[in-house]
Length: 202
Image 1: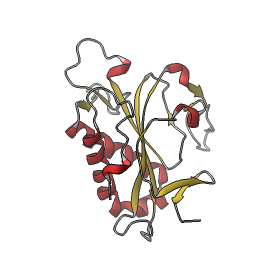
Image 2 (image 1 turned 180 degrees about the vertical axis):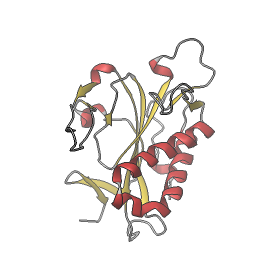
Image 3 (image 1 turned 45 degrees about the vertical axis):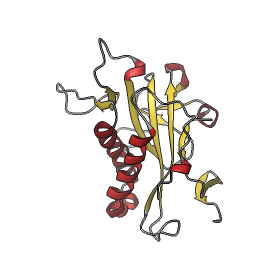
């Protein structure tokens, strides 16, 4: 259950984004992905992409941000969302990128752009030991403004004919950078050994 007590109204949010929209997005993500748990075990990267996409879809519907469409290309580029009724050229404060991660602090991107980032931290619990009826749980949501110099280049592990990860950027000292940015955090989940686990779990 998404509880009001798990939100922190003191966290800075970009103008046009509020707790109500974030709450709707959490509920939508958890509901829609409940039937796609098998995909997580087959293609975890695709599953994470869906978490971010469903977050984008809901914020487009319920916030003052809208999907940033690029009619000249097939794929989306940064940012996922931009402020509605903005005037002039897109500025960093008008940008909102929707990311997903099963890790407690890391943020990775194919770009090192400045702008607002919303990160849906999720875990998958097929036995539903944490909450009945919730095999997918958003346990924390970070909202943070990142500048270009907050990113570091992480290179690529891709090789000719061998696959691997493409070029990415990661946030420098993410745990420090994300301090005080959790607009939502379930009180029954803690981080142990670098992983989110139930308060009374192992």
